[in-house]
Image (tube, rainbow, N blue to C red; front, side, top):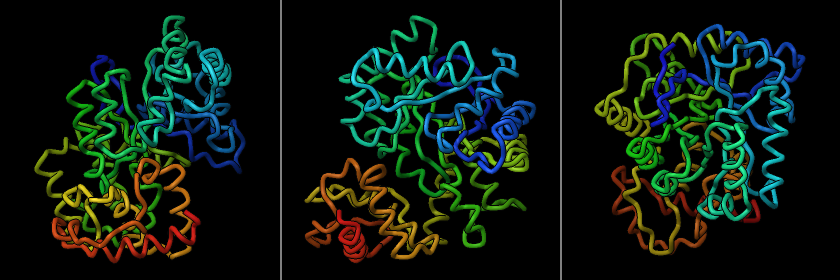
Length: 372
C-alpha cells in the first residue's frame, strides 16, 4: 500500500479507501464487517460510509468492525446533506447519531454531502450545518470538515478557494477526469485533499473491458488501469473503491503496491488516447463553452458518453435524464438541451469535431420522455 499526505493537514492516509456503498446484503452484517477488517489487514486505513447506504445498513456494519481496530490506525468518514437538518441543533444531533452507529469516539472526516450546485453549498451555512460541524470539532466529536460534490470543475474550484473544507470528494475517473480537472487543480493549489469516488465509473469500466482495452499498459486489465489512474495520480489523495469481495480488495492493493506516479504527460496521453480510440466520445475539455443560451454542453456530452461508450439503450438514457436532472450533472444547469438554438458555435470550437447539435436533439427527446 502507498500512503499520501491528506492536503495540508499533514496526516498520511492510504491511497486506497474503502467505500461502504457496495456491501452484499445477502450476507449478514457480521460477514460484511469482516470485509473491513480484511481491508485494514491489507493496509487500507480510510473507511467511508453514509446513512442510507446499503438500505441504511452501512453505518451499522462499520460499527461492528471499527471497534475491533486500533483507533489510531484508521480514519472514518460519514456524511449528511445540508437539507437533512433545519437548524444547528438538528445537524449536531445527526453527528451524534452517526457516532453512536459507528461506535467511535470521533469521526475523522464529516462530509457536507451531495453538493450538486452552488446553492447547496450555501445551504450548509444557512441551515446551520457548518456552524454545527464547527461546534462538533470544538467538542472533539469530529476532526475535519469536508464535502462531497457532484459539480463541474469550475464550481469545485469555487469551494476550494473558499477555504472552508479540508477535503473534497468528487466523481473522477480515467474517462471523465478532464471534466473536473479544473477543480482538482484548485484543490491542489489550496492544500485541499481530493478523494475520488466512482473510480471505476460506477462499475461501467469492469463491465466493458473489451471496449476499453486501449487504456491498458502491459498486461493489466482496463479495471486495473482505472484503479492505477486513481491511485497513482499525485493530485488525487484517495481512490475510494466500493468493495464487495476480498478479491476486489486484493486487486486494488496489488495495483497500489506497483503503481508509479502519473505524470502530466501521461494524463495528456490518456486524454488523447480516449479521443483517438473513442473519437465519438467527449473528453470534457470545455472548449465548446460559453453557450449563448447557457446550456452546459460538457455535462450533456458526458451523459451522452454513456450511450456511446457502454451501449446504453434509450430507456436507460431516459432513466439517466431523471437522475442527472435531480441529483447529477444537470442540477446546476441553467438551460436544457431542448433550448439549443443550433447556432453551431459549439461545433466550430469542438476539438474533436463532434456532432453536438444532433446529440443535443437526441438528449432533448430523452428529456421530454423523462418529463423534464
